[in-house]
Length: 194
Image: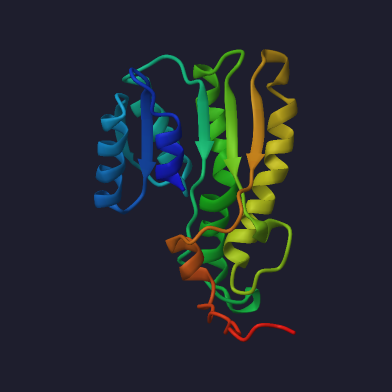
């Protein structure tokens, strides 16, 4: 999802900041793909689960530019699959920060670089609206992120800064595979109906 987002904004001459937490190879591949489209990729390794991590992202951005047009939060930590009542509360609090509430710290830190016409985009998921077994550590924080975006859509609005949620349909990603049990394909009857 992060790679697709980076590629969406990769226009010739644009600066695209790619934040990631752990997968160096995937970040490098994304940066190469962004560069192949004529944009300027900037890879930042920082953990959005901490306020200091978020602030370090913005400090890195400020070494390159004084203006941000779009800020996208699409981080998903899927390292905590399982039923709600079995989750470690401390690990769940980390998941809440990564998957949801980091959008607030990210917006607060980015606001000085944003002006009229800029946007904050929060990528959410179906688990924020419906119970998806084993997905509470993603779904519940995404619901929190959606509520935060409602407030963030109102407060900076007088400055012309927008905040919106985007929810795509289910995609075959590592995050989905880590959280959900494998689905067995249905058998299809090849006999014609009468």
